[in-house]
Image: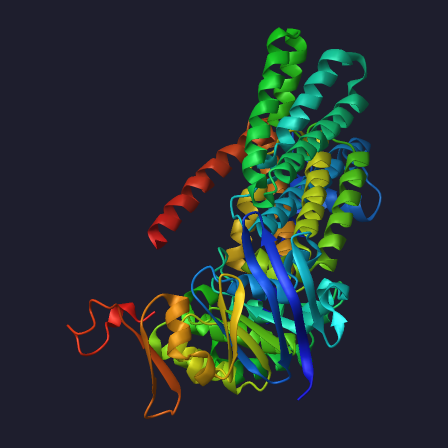
Length: 276
Length: 328
């Protein structure tokens, strides 16, 4: 598999704090990578640097390099970046009554010239992408009236129309019910494109990512398979809670459980509300 | 598309019919048969000829482009700021124009036909530049609207200060000018407004996908390759020029930019291309008929057009609030 992205010696320093410190890793074509870590670990900041949002890499606080196909990301135009990366964010409501079709058409933007109208080919592309996420019926539905999970799927379909090679998702499962969490991540996993996403839920990350990157206080702590990264000792240090690893009987995936020392023993099972 | 396209064609027909019908309204009786004769061949009645070609047609055409322009400016601002209550008047444009007009009235009373529109235009641009400058300094482009409201009050207070100490006749002129009127417009005004309007429409058509991308948030738009701040600034500049030109000739005509796009969204949709075309057409129909009311509802007198649009607009505003309360 060829290297698509190369992040080397990436640091982001603000007064009295390192948001990111000397991050190094490569992303190969087709990988599904989950970035995990506690709040404030630098997960979203890392995503912002990878896509050079607001030209952040040009800022004096940021050092190191991000290379896309062996060329510095700073040398790509914003349009070219949009042709390579598709972004799915956490919050996506609009004050206006956009239809699903309106949202999908936004994905065409990086490939369109000024004044252009939608062709029949574009409409076919949109329908195909919606079919892939199982929402072909929703074309004329009001986007705001969809459930959170459906909105995420529409945005993933928009990313498919955008035809970019790398899909970036920031906490795609936050605010979703368990059913939709699995549905969205399974979908992402089956798209056969390169995916980099931040995930809060370690067990979901383990289930749907081939590779995990653990960040803490701006540092890359571990980069590897879920089994390696979710090593109990390491997680205990990062999250500040005792932790236990197990193998899920159904899926064979590595799973972890946390517990507060006091509650352990009172409950033979681990405290449900404190699983992160 | 088909339903939307049909609606838009229907509206275009209505614009043409409205413009034709509006020409027949006014103090002098001109019926539609006479109008059609005058439009397609030679007028038998020379007085009717003068009234139609030199008074009524310029006035209806200015109402048409002014309505289009104000409605489009509102639509662009609302989509680029993602705020359904954005209106060119909230960006200090009219207060700026008012200040310009006041200064012109006090200092250049002899030469007002040229000086007044020019001073109003400069005042409006001045206001927008201050608003953008403040938003830039605060590094908060999303707070443009609040900056606009603040600047608007500031400029209005300067205007009132000058008027308070100014000569009563000049004060009267300014106050009447601020109420808005199409009574003194000429064909040349139509050409100027129409030119700015065409530039605005062409720019929006070119960038319609970029503007649409803003509808799901700045971050989403940036990820699609849009330079959000630059786009917003360009669009604000276009709206300012458009509104300033219209205000300079017609005075203060409020609420058109707020009301019309709101109706269009219900009728044809929220994305920029549909919204702009729909707003242009409904805006034109609206202002043509409001001007008919302005000039024909009182015997021997005109009601300033801005009074009618503001009255309708404020009721409409309350109606929107009531409806959104009902939905929530």
